[in-house]
Image 1 (cartoon, one colour):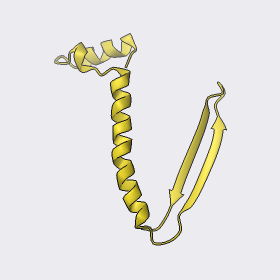
Image 2: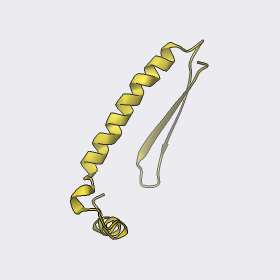
Image 3: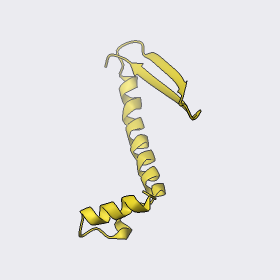
Length: 78
């Protein structure tokens, strides 16, 4: 969102779009966090209704630039 070229492209593609309509990266981050918090409530309710055990798997890795990542999955029967 902070890339000037990307902003210019958005403005070019939509005639009625104003510069102020393009969200700052912090607003995008806030929206992502809010969506996760809303989903987390649903996820907790689903897990409480799980018919049996919940199985978890995880994976750790790092990219060539040494950024670290963690992926976790859970499997259950609802």
